[in-house]
Image (cartoon, rainbow, N blue to C red):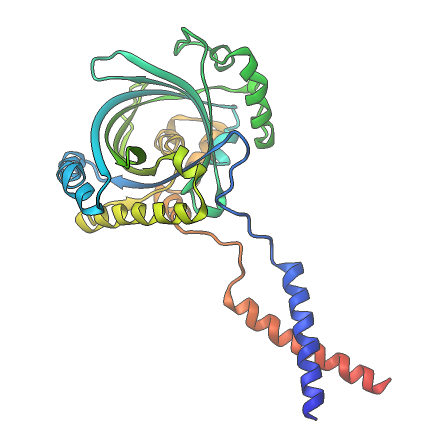
Length: 331
């Protein structure tokens, strides 16, 4: 009898493994980046209205001097301020908005209003990480590109087919994209460096609708340096994420009203403007409340089944194994 039970268990385990292989979807590594892409890893914390100055003063007092010293030797910090002017692009159906992607022409200005840099960016959210990890592609615009030009005209001729190829899997063609809206930002930043190499940035970002609707939001972005993170080993990435988590924990302890909201800026502003938009873009941005969207992106999804799957699979496997042995005995 004992031998029969053992045989049943062995057959059951084999069937259980087979079920797991067939039913469990493969886990996609979250740390791999396609060729030419960089990995952007960040936390986004929504700041309640009127709290931005208090948050900035605390960040300056904490991370400009004390925290770099506490992290150990080789750490240093610096501060800066810039103004960003972004034009977001999408198709009339709001396809990029729906898939959590962002396509923009960004212009950066210093505190005197001088244009210091501009670029075109495509960001694609990696769903497996709950919005924390995004692939980013950057393109250098033509010399003299302006904010009133069509996106294809902003790009260098050799970059147009490249961007079109990247947009195709998202169901979008470069020739079809149109300006969605403009978003301006005041960015106050703390830069953390380790051994003279960029490590992370802490940004207090006050964003507002460029066309004057009054829509605005403020958030803190705690971001690992994308170039360093993309090229790092898995061990180094894990160490970098520990520092990132520590900064987030510090902020939440000091300011309990902060709320994690991993939605991209494009999605946040689109949701605020939803009553003023029409068609699929409005439906995509406004179908859920900001609180619901926050919850969706702050939960960390997983491709692995829940524990009940393994228990149920094991019982079913053992039962099938016993049934197979009974059938063989009758034959």
